[in-house]
Image 1 (cartoon, rainbow, N blue to C red):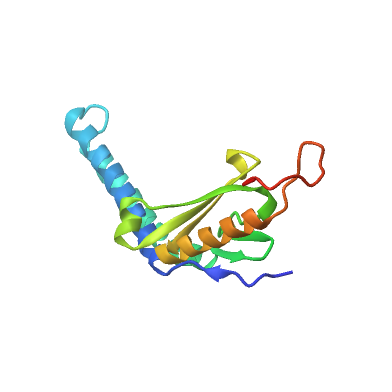
Image 2 (tube, rainbow, N blue to C red):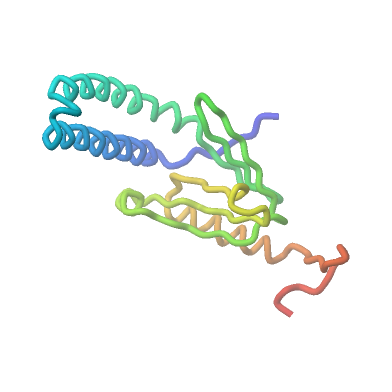
Length: 170
């Protein structure tokens, strides 16, 4: 069954493009520095070859951002959070409310400049089962976090024997 996923913020495309540009710039700078400092390892024709490989790759990655953006989405339901991503390798992740341990909203410097945030849902399964939803407007990420935490607090608690126990605030 296909779900109606919410799209992440369009500014997420800008974030992805900035990350690609920064990574490519750092890689090209490294290649040029190696050529300058140790010309025997990488002569200038090597720098030219690296540039001719890097520029088309940079162009393809930048164009790929739109496809990745359109395939990234989330759906917060009453009992679970659904997330999908991926153009070549598609991933659909579902985290049920009873698995949520805590939820946080984080921002890196680029995200802060674009008024974006990441919603991170930590689960009882450990690091590999945590869920990160990138590219959300800060206010939306905070709203989802608050809503999820409220619903998690309303869930019945069970003791070690598997029977319904006392709520954790008592």
